Length: 164
Image 1 (tube, rainbow, N blue to C red):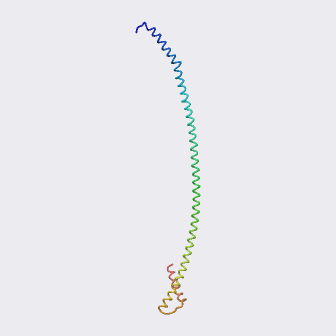
Image 2: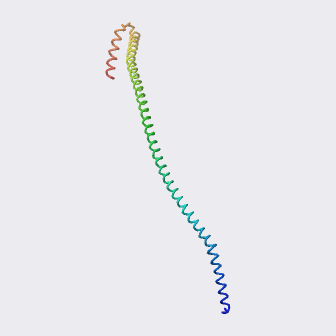
Image 3: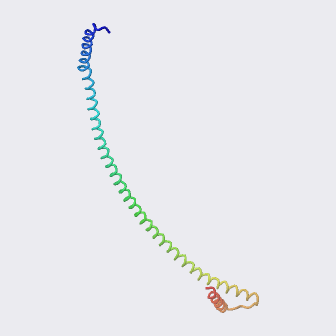
């Protein structure tokens, strides 16, 4: 640290730092600041685009939700209409089947009634014939079938009235 070299050292120090300062301030720092500005403007443009996309996506979501609601309402209407139509068809078929069953029941009841009447007549005929044959075989007498028929009918009427 000799004082005689201080002046020259200070001179060169000023020249070196001045040239370094000029180099940095004129060449390097403008490029750095330019890059920073570009990045800042890019970030701002990206933020603006992101905001636009956000608004568009919110609009699309609202449209989507309205479409879904409309679709649900239409589906409900279609389902209700189908249910009503099927219910009407089922009721119509049920009524038709009820009518057919009622007809069949009436026919069956008539058949049963006819069979009862016919069976009573047939039972009476069989009873008359059997009675006549039994008396003929046991007593060796020929009876008038009309007399036997009247007696059998009288007995069968009494028994039928008891059972009914």
